[in-house]
Amino acid sequence: MDQSVLLRGVLDKGCRLTSSVNKARQPGPWMDWQWENAVAGSIAGIATVTFSHPLDVVRTRFQVYDGRNPNLPNYKNTPNALFTIARSEGLRGLYAGFYPAVLGSTISWGLYFYFYNSAKQRYIKNQDKTSAFVHLASAAEAGGLVCLLTNPVWVVKTRLQLQTPQHHGRPYSGFSDALKTILKDEGWRAFYKGLVPGLFLVAHGAIQFTAYEEFRKIVIEFRHKQNSSIDKSSDLLTTVDYATLGASSKLVAIIGTYPFQVIRSRLQQRPSTDGVPKYADSRHAIKKTAQLEGVKGFYRGITANLLKNLPAASITFIVYENVLNLLKQIRTKD
Image 1: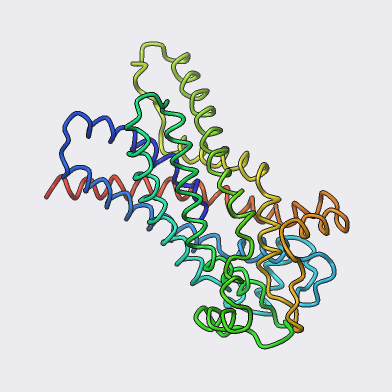
Image 2: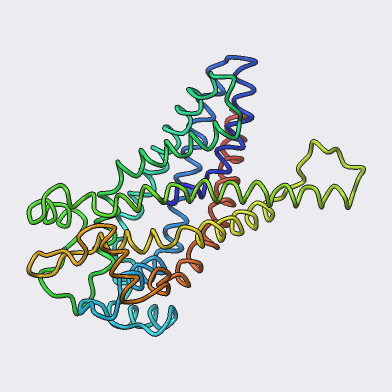
């Protein structure tokens, strides 16, 4: 999962929840808030993955392609890649690795939500800590734990997405076969390939959240200047605003952290038929990419990534907010 996609929704409602809990100390609303946000986030995550998965496949193949990979064709650009995959592999190719993508996103959201709020409650007990510290420290802790627990799922997803008709060796038949084959042929350590750059990607959420807050302040100040009679306690943001701000902050985060995604994908690809990994570790992957491809190599597939994640960030915010409001309305009627 992109842990930062729902970060703003969690933080915003978390701040309001903390205030109400401190005043009322009532367990009922807290539990309602937990399951409502969990359900809303899971549905939003599934909707996002379903919509954007073909672009995720294209992005992964571009990230790994270095001109010397016999298992991958040379696509000219993103539209050409989508067309070629659809023609030669069909819908199955466009949705390669879909099951682990959905499973990983769902699990990641549930774990992130749990770890984030547990950490926030622990940090907030120390009144000397600022709210900014609480949010960022909680986000970093939750992101790191989620990365450690879900990395095996992302390894399988990456490998399934990289299977093409010209793949050498026996292909994985599916998610469970990939798990068993990786464990048998490479051992449990293979499930944690790409973990180091994955941990660095935890910064993605912090960057997006910071950018989101700054953009949000600018929009609110602009709205108040346009209409000074409006109560300043109102942020005046609409669903369209949240979607736009989410996409804009996502762009900033992607540009800053994308090289880590490329390195992670390259480390997670399947070893050659002789069983030797193409890259020994993160340092080796960075060195070889820089030597052979230059800066461009660290941004392979970024077009597909932007096409996937910018609309996805908007869709996730829209679905999340609407589902959450619907669940609250249902609970209120009951």
